[in-house]
Length: 276
Image (cartoon, rainbow, N blue to C red; front, side, top):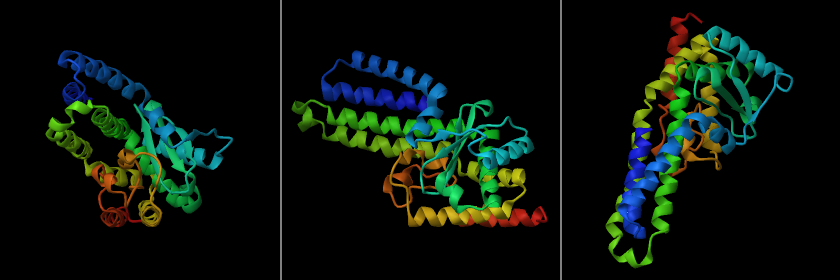
């Protein structure tokens, strides 16, 4: 939240220069905007992410097998059962969102339901429930919004600036353009790759199927490379099991996933220690 506020205030300074609005008014506007955004992120961040991907919450009657899997895995993890959503995308993947374990949603794409077998799907669900248990999903969701908001506000400010300032605004424009990757770097660093390794290991222990999760990662990685996601927001890339935006340059700024082969190798070693 502090990162979002700092970045919005920086944009406020630039907006004052580009638009001619007095600095006090510009900063005041962006302070109010940051307060609204911080509160909105906490209470509605999950709805924002679900709406981007048109995810639909499904009942047990609609997806009995999926609900059965999640119920069993949640009980194994000592968690309340999260809501379950289906994302109408053929690209196979999954993510978790929500502000707390009692307000969590686990979302699975239609492509994942079609591609993965039951054991692999359980492995993926265990991975996402581990994120829920470790309270990673609020951080992940807020990081996605931070990246999106900073990008949108920055470019809106740039392209709505007064034309009579264009001649002297070159350095400022360059500075603002640097804000986006800088902010993305902070987002990436704030969400350690260790979270993904931990989610793999903890998720595999929850499902007791590390090799199935490894197999799922192999399939998801291949699918993402062959058919990267072309819709949605690349700033949400870190929320998925594997990066679905592979091949899209801006997605690399927000990438927090360790190399998939390293994740698979760790899971294979874990299977040996678990004697599976």
